Length: 141
Image 1 (spheres, rainbow, N blue to C red):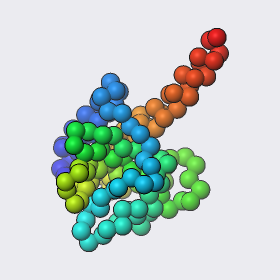
Image 2 (image 1 turned 30 degrees about the horizontal axis):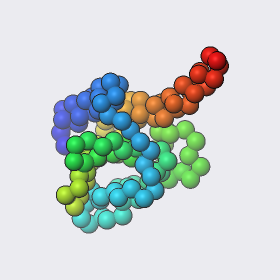
Image 3 (image 1 turned 90 degrees about the vertical axis):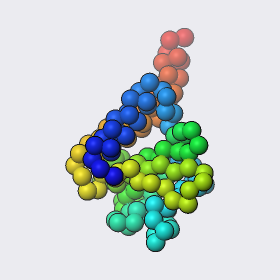
Image 4 (image 1 turned 60 degrees about the vertical axis):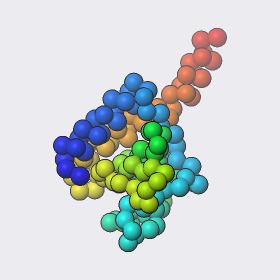
């Protein structure tokens, strides 16, 4: 996908996440990920790096008849500071297609890297917002 389209897609995902049009959920282990290539069908491993998918730090958002996926891959089994030393893959898949489409990953392009990290940090920070609200509510009573 060309750089301008990638930038537009990621920026739109950031905008829609900020205004809660996209709701991101942690990826369950049983999520039916589709491969991005017919020659490499293992969806739990990044094809180019061999890094493994970390579902706990990966997310999906339902969009119309499909899903937008923000997947985190790493070779570090003791991952402590995502997204450092990770590959972030932004993908789209739907119910009817055999394959997912990878919009971008941060492995090759520094522009994609900064945009994807920005999106990832936004999505990941929302993970703790409900806990922070619970703490604040407790302290306010």
